[in-house]
Figure 1 (cartoon, rainbow, N blue to C red):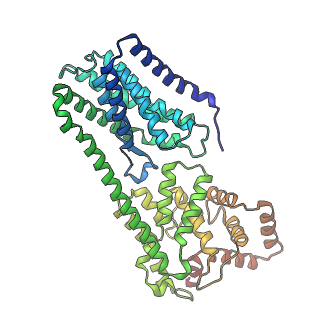
Figure 2: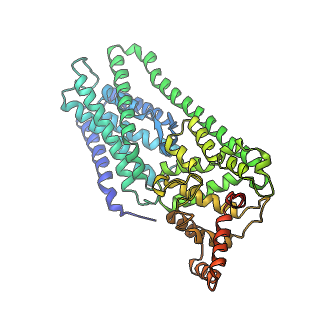
Figure 3: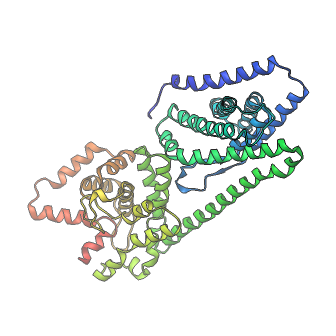
Length: 457
């Protein structure tokens, strides 16, 4: 596990502590009466509700990111009551929300800066650009400070997430790279949310009686996000079921896609892929054989060797899988990963692509796919033991398999490299040229569909 010292997080928390202290001092130095108490309590409730209005990002490539209405509610509160009450309300809402979700003390403290510092900096930007006093907004004169504060909120908000990820103690999953990848999209979304919050605040300040009508706009945004997420969940469930149906067509390969997905994720984590890459790898490995729906059962379940025509049909399934994924809005790269999962490192795969033209994730799936094929009973051969399959992976590294995912897989599976290499050496010592050629032919034939490819040839 790659780690970084805790000292890197000190400035992050020091800034939030300074913001809280300054807000308390500001309120203590002025008049804090019933009105301020009501505003603070109401602001805390609103921010708590904003944090609770959270849905998972509907984009598959988001790496599990979530979206809440916190930015919209926080900026609305900033314009209505000013930064100091808004900061203290953010503290109360953040602590209450995390306690409700039974989060650890370290997580509770770690979340505070992302919910405090954007409000502080946005408030300073509002004042710096000549914005009106708290509880007042004069448009169009306040358009410049409004947009300046919205941009400030968005940039500081995303900077907090990036710094939080970069200074985290456990860097094994490389979250900071995910945050950087998502940065442009997150900035756009946060700025738009801030503008929505400013619009609601402007309308409510103009006429407080419009609040019951305008505030539901934020709720409608949440409902739209939630519905989009639910649609995506239904789609993903359908794809998952589709993959299971493909496996169930052949009792010899039942749950094959599940196991390939499991092995692929093991390799991906061993190689420290980002969360976004792991999410994409999950789906491409889980759905890599969807194209076999276009292959007749008589070919899939044929116990003997395939004819040249039958194998030509079998070879089409990666392309069909790629087309199916593309129709479900996967991007072209993900579709190409599936298209190339039978490519070899030496360029002798189904499509004969050069290694530089094959997505790296396709090589990961190739290792996982071959290992599960070798260790599963098939109508045309018996399953290999795990040790024998490990040896085949090791023997094929650099020719059949890309070295990085192959060695990562062997290491993650606990392969004994020393004894394995000794077995490999014993297997080829003293052999004549014909025997070596035969060993190579058998090695090339043992990987999944390729055994019947060799027979067909």
